[in-house]
Amino acid sequence: MTEETENLFKAIFELEEIRELLRQTAPNHKFTDEQKKKLRSSIEIVRESLKKLEELL
Amino acid sequence: MSNIIQDIKLRDWEEEYININPLQTGGRTYPETRKAIISYIDGYSTCDWCKGALGITDKPPIREFLDEVSKFLGMDYTMLTNGCREAKFAVLHALTNPGDSVVIDGNKHYTTYVAAERARVRIYEVPSNGYPEYRIKPEDYVTVIENVKKETRLLPKLVFLTHVDGNYGNLVDAEKVAEICKEYNVPFLLNTAYSSGRMPVNGKKIGADFIACSGHKSWAAGGGNIGLLSVSEQWKDKAIEYSKKYKVKPIEIIGCSSRGSSTLALMASFPHVKERVKYWDKEVENSRWLMKELEAIGINQLGVKPTEHDLNFVESEKLFKISETHKKKHFYLYYELKDRGIVGIKAGLTKNFKFSTYGKTKEQIKHISWAFKDIVEKFAK
Figure 1 (spheres, rainbow over the protein chains, first blue to last red):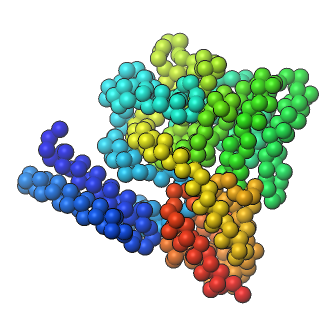
Figure 2 (tube, one colour):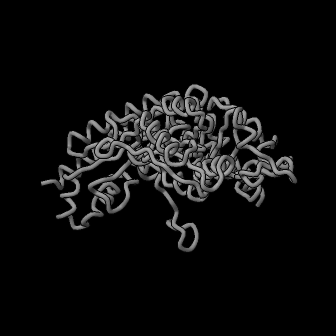
Figure 3 (cartoon, each protein chain N blue to C red):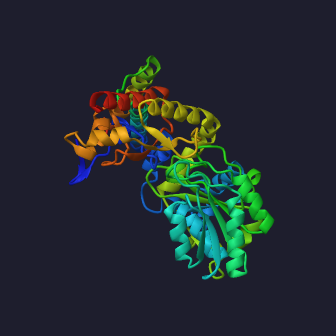
């Protein structure tokens, strides 16, 4: 698998993890400390993957 | 962003609301499920390494998965179907001829009845005891089987039981029905659309010959239709017959059933499903807690009490009376709940409706209780 495809799926999959956080906390989306930690980590992974994808430009 | 394309709206029910639609709570996906769906979304994605039939595919490991499902359900052989109804019809088609008789329960899903009609068989029903319990009594199967014998001079070719029905969430003692079927030497199919995948179900312990499952209703497999048919060794050859010309193709699923992402969704959810059935007691506890809270404000449970399932059917004169004065009339409950972050009760219903608490956190259960109380406090006179 090429790096770009791998990073594409990595970003999408990590967004699914964020989506799960929204689902678990609906309707108020009040996060616990643990959920906030997970959200931060997921956002970072998405950012890194997008950076790699930007290298295609 | 409210539309995906043209007039197809983005669906945000799971992210923005607590969804209590009983059809949907047990089929709600896990992140791994959605990742599998995203990756395998294109047509015939299960067939990259096709060995001639879906059930013997090793890449992805569908064969191994089906073996694991058989163990999980305490059965001997499992195949993928396009849904629970297709699993039921497959058995009907394999075991009966037009004009034969079958026995079904009064709380059956409509698809059991329609599948039997499609198989052109005579249908005999075991009635429930009616309002307010709608209980199916296993011993009534004896009466109905005897009636079939008397009227047709033959035994029924197949007996169905809806393990948990989709209206009242009544859980029937399947072992007792299985015992009766064994005494008459009649095959027994257990419809587990609302049980397997949510709660522990063991076919050997129960004594079931066939177990029909719904992947999208209770195995967290999401939107694509998918089901399972599990069979005991005794009935394997009769129910899983192969094509004479295309030797690896099971005829009752016309060779291969679900040839894409829904199969992978079911596989990806399976580790979660195996784990979650261990906590079924907690689900029942949550459901009972909520029912107690709602009954205190005039929303009363029908069906067998105390509830033994996450799905409950209620009646409420109090909620109905509000509709007579509320500006949104009988649609008020849907909108008032939605305003409080809850969806899933059919729009327009106020007096009788059903809902499910499956998979909800304690905070979400409390929120549901609060929402109903708030509506009653605000509008009931």
